[in-house]
Image 1 (cartoon, helix red, strand yellow):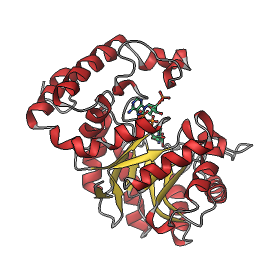
Image 2 (cartoon, rainbow, N blue to C red):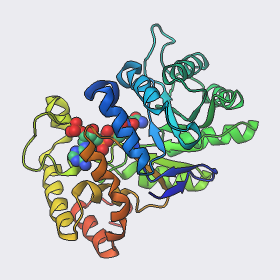
Image 3 (cartoon, protein in one colour):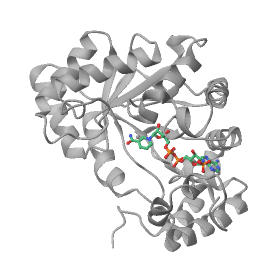
Image 4 (cartoon, rainbow, N blue to C red):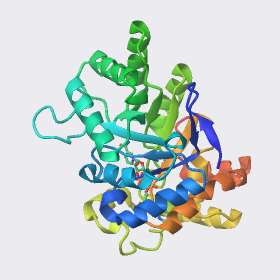
Length: 321
Ligand SMILES: NC(=O)c1ccc[n+]([C@@H]2O[C@H](COP(=O)([O-])OP(=O)(O)OC[C@H]3O[C@@H](n4cnc5c(N)ncnc54)[C@H](OP(=O)(O)O)[C@@H]3O)[C@@H](O)[C@H]2O)c1
């Protein structure tokens, strides 16, 4: 495993992280979730991602139980707040009240004293940004959160939060968690990366395989028991003919250079030095082992291979047209 510094902070994260959305407390049983976490840890993964809303809090309970026998200081544990998790008008969003309530609930469910990373799971237009920044700053002072960040915020929104924090001498957001994959790249490459360079924050990305599509598992049809076999509406959006055609081409290239298609997709994200860590998901041990292999396979992404990937994708948002 390799480790990268999270922006200008002193914190180092494994290039591959393991997340828990739809799997822990939901799609897989607790035994398998624990095994996945331990196998990842044994391969050097130190960052494990979670959120208050995953499986209605069950994902945090399962992760908390799974890390009980691991040294806390060797783990980077994250959670998030924003989506509705509690009853009533204040059971959602980024008000001081909901952030505090949700943070306490996450710590309790996981049975830990602090979160290493705490994310605002979306931007909240109904709460003044200063209230959000001050609340996160308070959590850091209270020792309940070490670093705070944002998820799926635009570069200018993060820039304003950093500006407010600097103006008032508060702890700034130091990491953004965006969706980033071969298919979904414009915002990260044109807005998040430049803003991260300007403000010195790290980037940890989610859904690297586009819900499994970029592993190539759907190239010849929809296998039973897979994520997209369970939701026809969602599959219609994610599994378009255009994407499948690209995925098949990527599959051929991956086979030619001797990597799995999932490894190609994950290693390609890590080509950018501004990406601190790629948060992967897995419902099977073989997925995790496959995805972890991306770290070694990075060296196969020569300039020639990178150019061939761009030609297949045809979606470079920084290309001069
Ligand atoms: N901040 C946010 O808003 C946000 C949003 C989404 C996710 N996240 C975080 O990011 C993590 C990863 O996101 P994601 O689960 O959407 O990632 P993903 O890599 O796009 O999809 C993971 C799913 O793809 C399949 N898969 C994974 N590796 C595979 C392989 N090597 N071969 C074949 N199939 C494979 C598995 O699904 P099946 O076996 O079920 O088909 C797995 O659960 C989440 O757990 C969560 O922590 C954050």
